[in-house]
Each structure stands twice: as C-alpha cells, then as structure tokens.
Image (tube, rainbow over all chains, first blue to last red):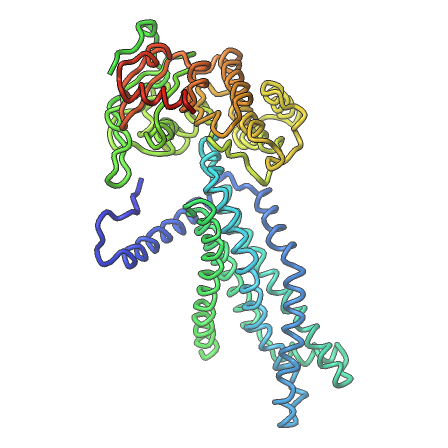
Length: 264
Length: 257
C-alpha cells in the first residue's frame, strides 16, 4: 500500500501537498485504464449512469443551448449589419456553435451539474463507509463506481454536445427568422455549407475529452473525500472548479492543435 | 497479558493474530497484539474511543494493512492476499459497520440483493428472493423490504446491516460498535440478534464495543484493549473483577453513565 502522506516536508506543506495530489491523481487515472478493459463490465450500471448523466441533463442543455443560439445571433447581427453582411449570419453562427460554443457550453453545464453530483455522491459514500462496505463484500468499488461513471460521462457528453449544437442552431434560426423571412432550409443550407468534417470531428473529440475529464475529476474528488460532511461539500465544490479549469485548458490546447492540423 | 482460557487448547483458531503493530504517522495505535479467536466463539474487544478497536478488525478484513505482525484468517495470511484471493476470503467474513453503511441510493431489498448478485452470478431470481426473505426473517424486518434506508430507524439500519452480512453466509462476522447510538431496549434487541445469529449460523464473531451490557450479553470472551495492547483477556467476569486500575475506572465510568 502506498503512503501518500509525507512525514517531512520537502518544500512547504502546500507545495508538497500539491505534488502528492498530482501523484495520487496520476495513479487514479492509471488505475482507471488498468481496470476499464477487465471484466466484469457492469453494463447495467453504465446504462443507469448514462441515463442519470445524459437524460436528466437534457432539460438544462436544451435551455442553455437554445438561449446561447438566440443571444449569440442577436449580439452578432449589429456588427454584421454595419457591413451589410447579415446574410453571413447563418454561416458565422454555425461555425461558432459547432466548432466551439456547443462543446464548451455543454462541458461547463455538465461540469457544474454532473461533476458536483458525482463528487458529492461518491464523497458521501466514502465518508459513510459505503465504499468500504462494498470492499468487504468482495465488490471492487473502483470498478463499480468510478469506471462506470467515467465511461458514462465520456459517452453521453459528446451526444449532449451534438444535441446542444442542434438546439442552439434552432434558437439561432428563430432569432434570424424574427428579423427577416428566412426559410429553415435556406438557413441550415447556408450554415452547413461552411462547416467542414474537421469542425465536427474536432468538436466530438473535444467533447469526449471533456466528458472523460468531468467524470474523472468528479470521481477522484469524491472517492478521496475526507473529514465528514465538510469533506463532501468540499469534494463537490472542488470537482466543479477543477473540471471547469481543466476544460478551459483543454479547449485552448485542442484549438491550437486543430489550427495546426487545418494549416497543413 | 493474561493467558487464554484452557477450553480453547484443542481447537484450531479461525483468526490468529501475532505480534501486530499499526501506527498512523507518528501515532502508535496497535502494539504487540496477539490473540486467537476460535470457531463458534464471540470475542468482545472493549476499550476506550481511539484505542484502535476498529483498526484491529479493519486489518483482519484487509481494509487496512498492518505495519508488522501476522494476521491469519482460515489459515491464510491476510497481508499476503490480494485480488481474487482476498475477495474469496472476504466472502467468508461479514462486516457490520458502526453506521451500518447501507447504500443510500438502494432500497432494503436492493441492498441485500447487491452483494449476492455481484458475487453469485449463477443464482436465479427465485433463489435471490428466497435468500433476501430468509435474512430479513432472521433479523425480523420482513415488512421493510421495499423501504429506503433513510426511512429506517437506527436499530432497523443495524438489523438490515446484519442481514446484508448474513446474505453471503459468512463463517466469521466482525461487528463494529453494533449498539452505538441506540437506546437500551434496541441495544438489547441487537445483542439478542447477535446471539441468535451465532446459534443459527454457527458463526465466529469479533464484537467491538464499549457497551458493558453488549459485552456481557454477547461475549464468550472479552479482551480489554488499552494503549494499543490487550491488558486482559478472559470471561466478562474475569475482566470485570480485574485489579487493573485502568480497567476498573473504565467499568466504573460506564456504570455511572
């Protein structure tokens, strides 16, 4: 058994704790990849978590996606109107939504809703000895609780992201339609004509990475929660903050990589 | 430390602990613990809060590892087991947590079915239902089958916790403070249940408690843990009548309480 608690501080308490946290997180991720391909696979629990994460997030994603589409269109219109280029609105909105906004909005909503929920659930299971109860019943709690939730996030968040793109485009169309009589066919024809395969592909890849990150951070924080109910609240809070931070870091990184690929 | 009762001389120990040490950071929790637990007996481990009672049974079931010493259960050294071997051993050991540790998101029925369906995949629905009904009957809570844990009282949670350990038909049961936080009447019911379970399923038990009534009613032997080591092992009467000042003060304080 690895003892992660240093007896003497190498630098200072906070710096040592940071590095020991990174070390612990690294082992957590490695443990996930070691266990995810080994049976038993708990398909029932994965489906259950997909329902909890995916289906139960639909109303929130629908609302935020729809509003994003409307607001982004309304904010973009005056700038394009100055140059007499409002006909470019569907293309501009489609590129922005498909390339960046849908995946990012979905990830941020899920980091808040799903990340905190997983962090709090596993955290409360941990402090109330439910995880140890699984262990003594010869059930692998990491396999049953962590791998299923991370997989469910990795599967459902890209689907939610595609759904968010669709709803945001509908919102955008309604906003466009209230100003000028554009048909839905012409709006979508115009919009999709500028979207490339790389745009859709990179958006899906991004969402997969975001989903994995949100699930992993939520599980890591919850699984390692300590100090009773205070620890549960802290785990939920840290799960959201860290997941959002990592999503932004990943967004910047992936945009750079996508730009290099499209350049070549 | 007082020697074990002679009645156990010819019996093979189910649990054997030799020279066990455990510390957390700089704090020594268990020091030189040596004891054997024999088939069919209820060993009560008593001691003040923080004396390492729960740590001891967590080491026995492999939830914590020891720093030094040997813990053998059914002839297998727990520290050397991992993966499937450790799981196979754990299936023979039941563990009742202090909080009962029922799964909040599952109903009572699901709590009982869960360890069974995860470990005995060849059982059909009918056999699972029969096993669930049998253990609920044993703890006298058949009518609570479809209730959520949050709707149960403290005593009922403990009973369901015992039912969950029984469903895998363990040969050893480790009880961590089974009567903690319960009123005297409910505590007595739990004590009776522990004795009934021992008789009906012929289990060997270690009961961690600082409740004197629980120790007296359930223990065939009592071991007194003090400063990380056993200072007295014997029948309840022998420990109660000990000349050790710390034990005397422990008992007298409990009586005042």
